Image (cartoon, each protein chain N blue to C red):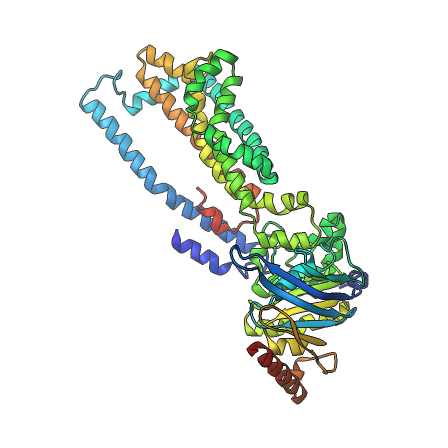
Length: 271
Length: 288
């Protein structure tokens, strides 16, 4: 890759410094048709400092996805407030970059046009958007595949494309169990690679996961949500040095942190 | 057929890893071969029928006014080509323009129905009800209102073709992936952007399914409209031939109508493929 292209890559990434995310006393319930409404989130307060990587972990049905939908602006809370970059926004849609569980690539857009869709929605001319994404494709292991249709990509490549689309998006990233559908080997590769990219990009990340080891390996802090209605049951700071590498996974400190989180999760899932 | 599509699926994920060209080319060759395999069985049946028809008509010496043999049909039609050709041309113009008109109106209406709940609630039931009208009985009225020219025929063809295209497009638009819609909304997409980037491309396959059903009516409805009253066209040609007891020419016109419908159908299928370059080859293979 040429020096010019490198510089362009750097600038494309550097343009997304982290934004602080915060939710206060969030409450959300859904109508069930008959009977009382289903309370999904109750008094959830949590935050992610600018550039911080936090994980939200909890049993199925604890309202993690609802929390994300509210953060992303797809739904409005019944109570409480959402602050992005320290402000309560009139319209949150478009403020955070959201990566759904499925990759969400559009079958009719080539890889390069899929990753630049956020830019193109924002009115950036196609050629300009492509020029910005092209050097990053290489960095994301998608070099040579810019003109491929989504069905021609492997599972891992689809995820990297979906993640590049997220990185090119906004200063805060919401990752909803991004690696849930991947096989073990690919998942571990992707986790490591996500860390590398995040350390480079420096944007704020909120990760939803089921996976205790994943949360410990990736996050600065972990919020444990209780079963429905979701409440913040515990908050753990993961005291592990960065940059973290795969060697860390076998270490004693890692095992200690993992055991602590597992215990906390067990405690609050049973209650 | 089944075997070839499974091989395609297994080669798909890494198709571009080594180099860009060989895989698609191989795929195309395989597609052509499987298509030939599709064509042979019906072709053989057709040939058998034609041979039997010829043999029977000559063996039983049936009068050509009642049932002309295939050889006579071809020969007579060829000799009458000076009359047949302009008739074909007129009817083709009506059929094609009718299909285009129907598609344009159907797509506009489908998008409106998809866009606005009010339009959907007020138009969709009427659209379905309109299909229960016997369009055939409208033909004489259309002639009374608009005369013997080409325009009323185009309108009638459009009436016949419109419904499957409109319903297909409405359903296609509604079949868009809600997750993709949510994702683009989180990126701040407007409704118009969602329509253009997600809903419209999602609707293309079903729109074409409707169009393929629609075009099979195109020539038949044009000919019917001509029966009722026209200056030229295959309908007029058929009637004139019948009145002159030239049954072989009626058969010739029927044959021509079938071939033209087939050509129109294939043209739509090719257009469909051209409109969706992103589709996996295995999906389009079954297309026609």
